[in-house]
Length: 272
Image 1 (cartoon, helix red, strand yellow):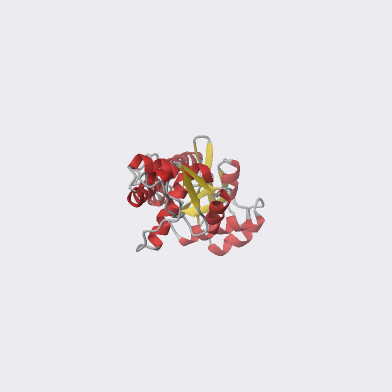
Image 2 (tube, one colour):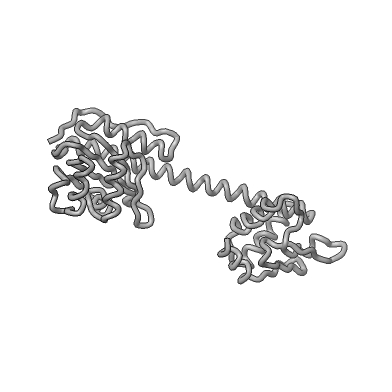
């Protein structure tokens, strides 16, 4: 059996993302005797993908388990239970995996579920080139690494969510500026106009803004925005000017109220 000395596995986090998870798998290999390679499998939309692999062999073993749908990694992610095999080549639980993993010169394997907030996010995979089981102390230590991996994955998702929100806010601000410049509206009126377009077409505001900005970026020299301008953009004449978020749609705004063809707008979104 593989034993482990008593020492804390806790390590400081990097700035987030895959770097943190890569650092953690390297720490697991260094801190757990008998472990030669490590990786982290991330579960998303029912599919497993690998991050933080310390060696191409671990990545190949992970991919093999995903391909055939069996092995300690897959079982740990599915059942949320620690899964060990003293010799995966001879383990009757996963004959398909055992028949092929021997080609990678891997023998023993431990997979620990990565959980956060009551949800299984993936698995920490520990590989060894020699047969043998980790003892209780080693497993407990490995579970602490798995717990840290859960924190790192939550952090990564929070960063991704924040980044997406910031990008959306920037795009909406750019779209507001385009409407302000084109029609001489103040910021509040330009924003309310985009909101009316979003509500009338049943398309998210950020997607309306992204479409408008993308069109202008595609044709930087043009000042034409295909959508009917708000009638109050030209109070002296009461007229309206035509612009559109795409060449496939038209918006008409009369008496300051946006009217648009939702079907055309949705069709243009699908086309993108």
